[in-house]
Length: 249
Ligand SMILES: [Zn+2]
Image 1: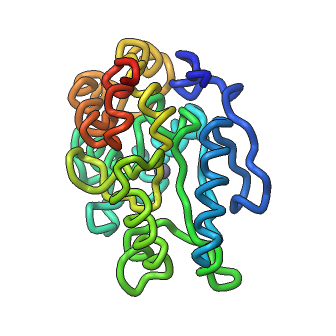
Image 2 (image 1 turned 90 degrees about the horizontal axis):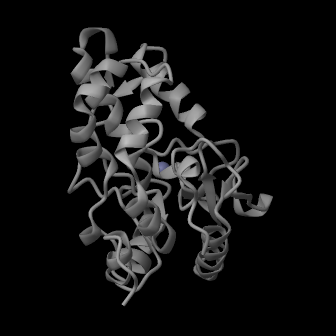
């Protein structure tokens, strides 16, 4: 499998991803070919259990993540607390604002969505006509429209130690909120994560026009540890050696 280049890992180049066919997505979505192929297998399995599993967000560029970040930092886009209630960005210190953004949005250059291995899913069969999914925890909780999908993913992924997909954001272990819709293709993401280089990220952010950039620079190592890295122990057992930068046994 081709591992993305250093530029691709930072979201600066998209030559490592391919467009998914329209029936497998909502909107326009690209993924790494290996992740795309594995997703189509998972989608077929889901279809047998009555789901119309679709990717709503896959590859995202550095530029796109930077727009999201800057809009939140400048109060142009809503900033949510852990319970998905709106915060007033102007009332927060720079550090509190950075931490609040990171709960729901990745630092540009440090998003797993840059890699082509990670994506967000919904069950299109559970969507009422004309209703767009908002990807909030309530949709996947009991009574929510994707509750049944959440249950299925728990059985298929979380309780299957040899699964090739896992859900890195379960609300424990790091500072990111629970994102039950976010799947990661471990054979690729383990390689990407092992190659991630904080020094290159620091250089990139210094020249990118990142809002709150000085605060991010001071805190960068802590932010990477708390919000960007997913420990090897949280990967499915089969892929832990790869995540640790070792060859597969
Ligand atoms: Zn995601």
